[in-house]
Each structure stands twice: as C-alpha cells, then as structure tokens.
Length: 399
Ligand code: SF4
Image 1 (cartoon, helix red, strand yellow):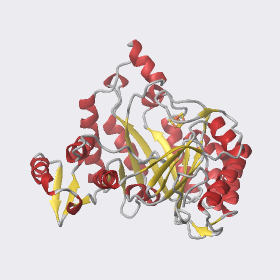
Image 2 (image 1 turned 180 degrees about the vertical axis):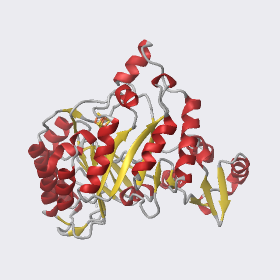
Image 3 (image 1 turned 120 degrees about the horizontal axis):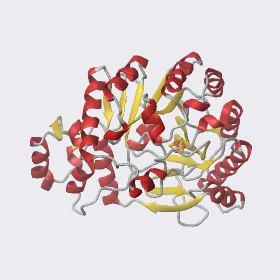
C-alpha cells in the first residue's frame, strides 16, 4: 500500500519486528559516529511523545489495524539505559496503545554499564524487557580509556551481575577487537574474564575509524596509530577459536552464543523479514522497500511533530538486488545459502573459495568458515557480476 507521500511502499500489516532508537548519550566515545545527541539528562518525555506520533503516522500510512502482535522489540541507541525505569515503562505504554505486546518473545534493550543497575534491570523486566545488551567493549581499563568509554572494567563486570540479580537472565556483551598494539591490550586475559562471566551471547566488533570522529582526527594528526588489518584478522580468528572451544556457537559473522541463546530480533534482519523502525536514524524494511528515518534528533522530532512523517529516504530493492542481499545476508550466518540461488557460472569460483578454506559445501548449501567471514565482502563481490556487495541493512548494532 502506498504511504502518504505516494511512493513509499508500507508493509500491508504491522511487521513482527520493531526497532526503536533512543538517540542520547551522556558523552561521545572517541570512535563513535552514530546518530547521538550528548545529554546527561535526555528529554525522555519529549522523545516518548514523538515516538507515539511516529507510531500513529505508520498506522495511518499502512492502514494497519490496532492490536496487531509483535514478536520482537529492540531498543537501541544511543544509551537506552538513560531512559531509566520510567522511560521504559512509558515506551511500553506508548507501544501498548496500538500493539499487542503479549506475544513478544524477545524485548532487548541496550545499556551502558554506567547507567545500569540491578534496580533498573528489575524495573525493565517488569515493563517487559527480557534481554539486555551491555556495551562493555573491553575488560581492560587501558582499552576503555583509549576508546573514551565512561566505565571501568570492574563496573562492566558488576553490570553483568546486576542484570542477573535484577532477573534478566538473557544478555549480550559487545566486545571490540582490532585495536593498535600500542594500547597494550592483554587479549588472552580478557577472554578469560569474559568466559568467567558466562554471558549467554557475545557480539564482536572490529574497530573501524570513521571520518569525523575524535579517533580519526587523532590518527590523522599522528597522535595515535590506526588499526592494523593483519592484527584485525589474527584477533578475529583467535577470539572465534577461543569462544568455540569454550562452548559458544559462532552462528553469525559477528555473533556467538551458548546453545539456544541466539538473538531472535536480529534473525529478522538476516532473514529479510519485515521490520518497523521508530526514532531518529532507524531503518525499516517493508518488502520490497527499505526506508530510513531522519538522522538527527531535532530534525526527526520537528518533521514528525510537524505532520511530515519521520522519513529521510527510501528505496525499492529490485529482484537482482534482493538475490544479492539473500546471498550476502545468508553468508553472514552459519546456515549459509542454498546453492540454488547461486548461478551455475559461480561453481568454479566456489571451488576456489573451498580450496582456500573460506567456504564449505554440503547438503545443497554453501556455508562460510571463520576465515571466509573475514573476506565476506570480497567473496560476495566476486559472486556479484556487478562487483560490489549490497549495502548492509541496519537498525541494530548487533548486525
Ligand atoms: S555509548 Fe555507544 S552510541 Fe553512545 S557515544 Fe559511545 S559508542 Fe556511541
């Protein structure tokens, strides 16, 4: 069904996966280029009011019936733990005004260890949150200081214990790798600290230097060295080997879990299921259209409250791009892709990838290895006669 601007294709029913972006952080980390506004006391009530109006805009655009069921909710940021207990309760009330939340299997919220506590975990659990993603990044204070994080390693470990004390058993830890040698990180010691905490889920992020960040400026001035690509690859493989030996399943290029602890919400991205995005910079997928909201908080707020809707842009994903997305997203996961969607002319290329140890072929599927995941973009580019991989869908940093 066409949206109010006459071109955007809105899903005919409410998508089962919902992403909500909370765009505030108390301070900006040195490497971060996300759409965040700095605020120690964010305007939670105002943000909630805009989310409510945006949700109403989508219902009008899609002609959706109130009371539709959701399967997963992901509150990302930014720093959603700055919502506090009242803010998350307020978000639940806004969503419950239009949606049936009784069927939600996974409600994940991101948290910074500094603004997290057992009391917050308990209050969030009462609001429906059943999974927390803690932005830990490292358990080494030298690394945390270098990254410009606002917490210590001890505080991060305590936040893990607080999540459990507050009744949230399912949680993820974000861990960063690929830092320059000069930071002096003791990776084996850190991995032992991680394993001792027994997190059900881990997401690995390689350090990338984004233009405009403090880190990029320091590297450009020669104050700090940049990441080393060889070390990046070496650390990725070492961490993957350590975690799989410790009982974790490497089920997606960046994600590891104990058996049965996969992120349900992120499966919707990898499976190319419909997803509704709310909040500044959030992305949505209304097959065959992908859309993205205005990036900055004031621009999104003013547009939504002015009756102009949340969108900055959208695109229709054509048949060939859909096929390439399926290949690229499928190869991100351990399930790989059905060989049937690859062209017969790719067999020679696949044999070469298999000989190099980058993929495995069995039972009609092509599955990547950990070393193959390191080259995912170039593998897909070779399988794409156009020569470049499709753009990543987004909405959650666990993707
Ligand atoms: S906490 Fe996350 S979103 Fe906020 S500034 Fe740091 S990296 Fe960016």
